[in-house]
Amino acid sequence: MGHGEASGWPMAAAVWVLASRRSGRASWPSTIATAVPLEQPNGHGRPPFYIRRPDSHPFPTGCPHIPIMLLPILILVGLLCHQSCQRPPPYTPAPQSSHLFNITQPSSYLQSKLPSYQIKARFDFQSVNLALNQEWIELDLFRYGLAKFSAKEFEQAGLNAEDRYLIQFMADQEVSHATVLSNMLGPRAAKPCQYKYPFKTVKEFLDFCQKLTRWGESGVYGFLSFLQNPNSAQILLQSIVTEARQQMIFRQFEGLFPMPIYHVAGIPQSWAWTLLHPYLVSCPRTNPYIEFDIFPRLEILNNPDPFQIDPRPPAITHNRTSLSLPGRQVRFRFEKPGKVVGPNGDYKTLTHSKSARPKFAAWTSQYNVTYSKLEQVDEDSATTVQPYGVLFPGQVDYPVINGTVFVLLTDTDLHVTPSNITALNKHIVAGPAMYQVD
Image 1 (cartoon, helix red, strand yellow):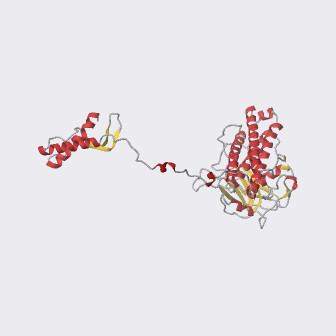
Image 2 (cartoon, helix red, strand yellow; image 1 turned 90 degrees about the vertical axis):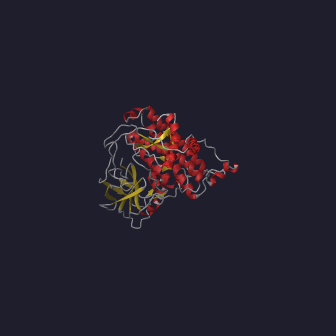
Image 3 (spheres, helix red, strand yellow; image 1 turned 180 degrees about the vertical axis):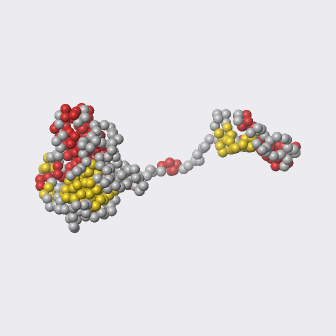
C-alpha cells in the first residue's frame, strides 16, 4: 500500500461505514483479506491501527445513498479519524517535585560509616590467620619450584620461559596477598615458616600446586560469609578470587580440562588446616597458635595420576575423558588419632567421632556431599566404590563428583549443605584427602 492510499483510506473508510449504517444498502465485498498495519512513507507500521485490505478494491463497490444534510457531519468525522491516525505527539514527562530527584540508592548501613578493616573477633582472627599461612606457603612454593628445577627440566615438561614467568608473577601476587592480610591482622600476624614438599619432578610440582591452591581457595570460601567484619571479608575475597585463577592455570599446565565444575566447594577451616599442616616444619614462636582441629591423616593409595592416565601436554584446554569414573574401587589408608604433628610438634591429631570407626566415604564437591559405604574396613585401611551423583535431579549428563574433590572417612552419612558443612566435623574419623577425578 502506497503513501497516498494510506493517507486517504481512513477518511474514506469512515465515510463509508457511517453511510452504510445509515442506509443499510451497501456491504463489504467478499474478498476481504487478513488485517495488516498501516504503513508510513518510511515503510514502518503505524500500530495499533489496523485495516482490512480487500484483494481487489480498496473500497466497497457501489455508491450508497447519503442525505445531503449529513454530508458536513460525515466530512468532519472523516477528518477527525484521519487526524487520529497521524503520528502521536512526542512524550512529555509530567512535572515532578524536586525532592523526587534526590532518592537515595539502596545501600548497606556500612555506607554511612568510616569502614575499619582491623580484625578483632577471635573467629575472624583465627580464620584469616590460617588464610595468611596459606598465602605464605604459596609464595614459598612458587619460588622454590622455579629455583629447584632448571629451564631444561621445565622445557621437558612443556613449559617455556613465558610459562615460568607466569609462575613468578603468581609469587608476586602472593606477596601482595600476604601483605594485605598481615595489615588487617596487625602485629600478631603469622610470619613465614620453614616448609617441606612432596615432589621431585616438574610435573609433580605442578600437581602439588594445583591441589594446594584448590584447598586454599575452598578453605576461604568455607568461612568467608561468616566473618563478623564484612570489610575485611571484602579484602580477603578480592585476594582469593586471584587464587582461583592460579588453580585453573596449574590445571592447564598439567594438561587437564581447566574447569570441570559448575561451582567451587567451600570447606571448613579444620579441613584446610588438616591438609596444610604436614608441609609446615617449623614456624616462628611468635606465630599465633592455630586453634582449628587437625584430623588423622587419610591417604588414597590409588589416586588417579594425570601423568599416567592419558597424559596431555600443557594447553589452554583438552577435551579429555575423566581420569576416574563411578564404579571405580578406591583404596584408603588412615591413621589413628593422637599423633603429634604440625609445625614445631605443637599439635595432635584428634577425632570427635564417638565410635572412631569409619563407615562412609564423604565426597565433597561443588554444593554436595555424596556418601559411599566403606568395605573391607580394618584398623587402618578400607575400600569403597566411587559413587555417582548429580548436582540437580535429572542432570544425568554431568556427575557432581568432578575436578579435584575432598574425601573424608566418617562414622555416619549426615546430610549437610554448604552453610552447615562444619557439622560434619563431629563425625570425621580421618581426612580429608584430595582425589583427582578430572
